[in-house]
Image 1 (cartoon, rainbow, N blue to C red):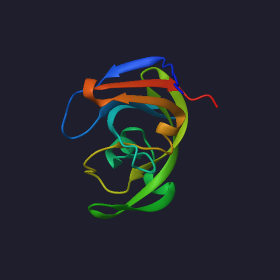
Image 2 (cartoon, one colour; image 1 turned 90 degrees about the horizontal axis):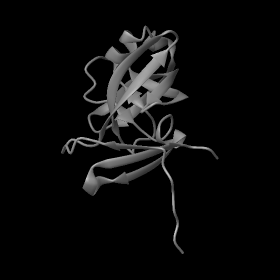
Image 3 (tube, one colour; image 1 turned 135 degrees about the vertical axis):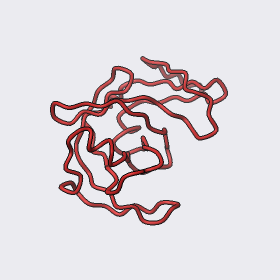
Image 4 (cartoon, rainbow, N blue to C red; image 1 turned 60 degrees about the vertical axis):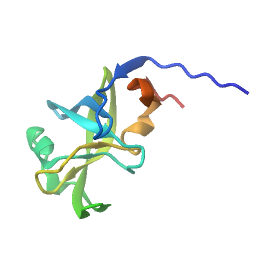
Length: 135
């Protein structure tokens, strides 16, 4: 049995040993900021730097607290609702921001990110394909 999917958008990402990096825009209230994130299907959620939250005027520690288990040890973060814009697609999402500055990388994970999209990946060609998820 053969299956076929269709996608609205295609993006050639940089072929980089550090992972698949995509540009996106986060919006909180009237403020928005461009940033990048690593697509990480193994990450349970989306995590962004404290500096990104500051640019958006987000009072980080007023969010919903969580302690994440990372390779570097526990990481304190706080959840907030934002709008994510990715290649012209926009959706409300609940994401987390690091309590402390200097997070090594932003993560575009399953909950809050990938779950809002139909995502196709052809790593050999450095191509990612996206379509809004409509259940």
